[in-house]
Amino acid sequence: MSFNTISVVGLGYIGLPTAAMFASRKKKVIGVDVNQHAIDTINRGEIHIVEPELDMIVHAAVKEGYLKATLIPEQADAFLIAVPTPFKNIDSQIPEPDLTYIHKASEAIAPVLKKGDLVILESTSPVGATEQMADWLAAARPDLSFPQHVGENADVNIAHCPERVLPGHVVRELVENDRVIGGMTANCSARAVELYKTFVQGECVITNARTAEMAKLTENSCRDVQIAFANELSIICDKLDINVWELISLANRHPRINILQPGPGVGGHCIAVDPWFIVSKTPDEAQIIHTARKVNDTKPDWVINKVKLAIADFLQANPAKTAKDVTIACYGLAFKPDIDDLRESPALNITKLLGEVHIGTVLAVEPNIKVLPSNIKEFDLVTFELANANADIHLLLVDHLEFKDKRVISEFVIDTKGIWNVE
Ligand code: SAJ
Image 1: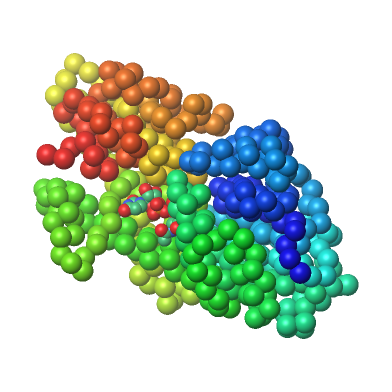
Image 2: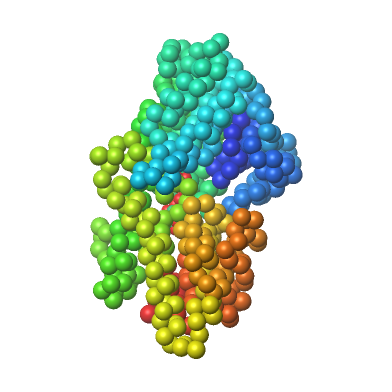
């Protein structure tokens, strides 16, 4: 049976581009989201996120009638769930995954499921989450059979196919990247491959659901560990008065060395989160993964301490001034360059914290955002020029393109990305 109608549940940074790709291949796509603003925006042919090229694809898909967004799921031949999987008990030593959104999405689609449908979990998930989702669906629809009970003969096929696209390059990577296809049975995998081949040019590599879950967590944990190494190096080099950027570029000339770049910490909803899904399941075994998380999570504290030291130096050089007279400018709020995404952003957290602890003014420059979310009161959003002209301490937090050709002429520059003080 071919896939005529495809439903994508969760129209965020992954779901919306995925929905748009199917629609661009002339499939009828029903996008589902709980956010009325997102639905209205998409149905106007516009987008509520920043992602290069996506606006044109969504615009065309909606205009031509292939893509629509709704609050309530409708019948489809395939359902892709791309909802967030944050962690809960965030302040505990080891945060645990929160599957509430997957649970709610399962409950939402269950009433419209029919024999022959395929359900794919795309959200990054702890090992066992796909089986859990299958149990939630089975509990809601006792009239249908599921792979965990009847194997290949199931009425509904289920697979985990983790998304692996890089924000900022989503449109290209959705098409070109290889896909890991983790079906609960061979039939489930075959159906999922058939679905993705609608637009995926990369290879669709088949495994089981648990291995697919772990593959995604492994990729992001590997990157987290590598960034932790770079962040640790930056702290060591600061102590030893060595330029870490020069050091890394020298070491990377070795044919088998490829050190990543240090920064103010690791952000985003993936790399700073997913390793905890491994650590919380296997806390005694996941030693390096756990340590890397701690190294990256404490890097913002180190940056804040550098700012405090810079304030002290500034006041020593300007004895007529007090801390109240010192203005700090933070350049960049997003969790990485050239996007507007503030989720789990160390840059945002550092700026907010400085706004709370610093008695003087804190200014922020973020070229990818026009207005700050209403709950942010700790600092003001200003232009680069205004910050540059008025601040005493300049803290570069994100290597946005807009900042790369700019220069801040000041003694008091803290450059956490190595784009300004190359000397
Ligand atoms: N970062 C550094 N130094 C580096 C590279 C990154 O500090 O050398 C920081 C970034 O500034 C950012 C964080 O790490 O704060 C994560 O950025 P990223 O570009 O490494 O990754 P994400 O979170 O945008 O996307 C990752 C990707 N995973 C891998 O590269 C293994 C992407 O392919 C995944 O699809 C995505 O997570 C996801 O959704 O899981």
